Length: 259
Image 1 (cartoon, rainbow, N blue to C red):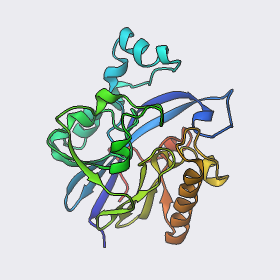
Image 2 (cartoon, rainbow, N blue to C red):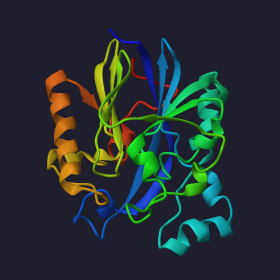
Image 3 (cartoon, rainbow, N blue to C red):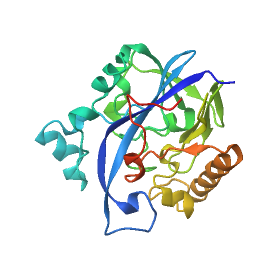
């Protein structure tokens, strides 16, 4: 039994990165265009958004690009008009106000960028991730102004897996960050879909069990990769990768869906 009716993949832009960001110790001379996504679930309990994508305010003008990217030795995120959140929701007859529950897998800027646009919604995150959010010694990639404000209605989840509803379980996949979560979604026709988020960016991470380039605990990150692989095998499930620039080209993107 599942309360999840449909899964929509919202493509929210691309990061231009050295491959070593995704595969530890591999690909230092290779640059990839890594997709950024958010996942929208149509459920019996209302609309649920898994991650919120990147906030284009961080690249809107030259000063923002310099402060947030060029000045940090990074290339700016690429966001085309078709990647904006609002038109993608409008194509489904929705606005941000229709989404009552946001679940953040972690707080990096490509995952939590627009959470402040949901002051009406419950925002769930693992407590470990929330408590580590200002510790930049733990990991780079946090933009504090994305989430540091009074408008966010935080709901903190304790360590471990969390069944949100029948058909949606958030999985504790610590390693990339202190409180990273992945998702297991059960759909009426497709069956089990595993969404690893940043537990592993590329198919290579899973096929060859290669840790992400950025981790707070590399053994834990590798254990999370192996765990997700096992879930897919045991359930005859499907894995939709978050950051893979090849697989995004054959992923069903909204307004298409998985059901």
